[in-house]
Image 1 (cartoon, rainbow, N blue to C red):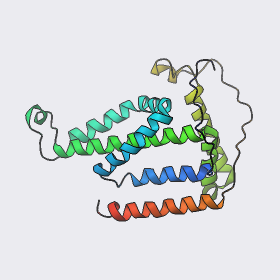
Image 2 (image 1 turned 90 degrees about the vertical axis):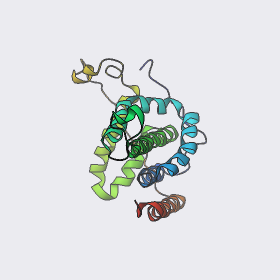
Image 3 (image 1 turned 180 degrees about the vertical axis):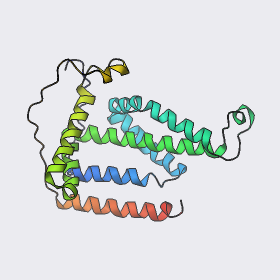
Image 4 (image 1 turned 120 degrees about the vertical axis):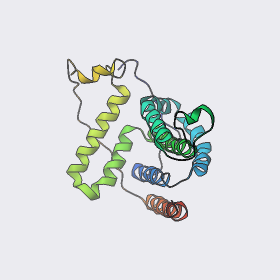
Length: 220
């Protein structure tokens, strides 16, 4: 529709299978749960500038839509974590040194996940991302179940990017059914097979994930 945001694809075109890129993103999402705050800050120095340079619009949209979640996470961990009270007026609010560190860690983890997701969406696009998810889930749920899940995810992504109405209006608009439901043409996903480089990248990703778990995961 007119006025919908446009997101140009990154160049050069995708070389790896979308499923292997999605697998790497899932591995990074899991690995960041074990990284301490100093390591997260080091990752931030690399990821945030890349996301701002190549996928600024998507990143800003994701951050805007999750701003209340980020704020809630910060407040919950900052106010509900016991520890050494901060000096001054912060002590009256119940803020602790451990709570501030824990809040910063979790907010930074979610922000990094959103930045990586923005880069992934910018590089692949919705249909390639969903086809990658379908290829990853096919061994677990069969072809029919994976197709249904991929179709639902694709419709959600298309609506969030190109839909109008509630996205631009009041939150109560989400509760009102539309006057006319949109009619979608038949959807086709191009599912490319894995190649040798895809298996190599996924094996390397697993080794890296095991290394992160062995270095930080066991001690946390």
